[in-house]
Length: 65
Image (cartoon, rainbow, N blue to C red):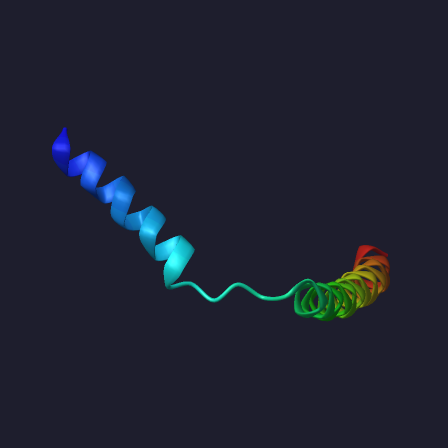
């Protein structure tokens, strides 16, 4: 059980003294960058899905007749 206590103490020490946390402004800026990237990725995937659905519908319509 002392190994677990030592682990918790060392993890706390590392988080408090060794990790460099971003400032509030940096956090906001990186959050906006991530959200914009997510939006662009979502639009691209939606576009690919939409186009492939239309193409397959046309293809199945041609082959089904």
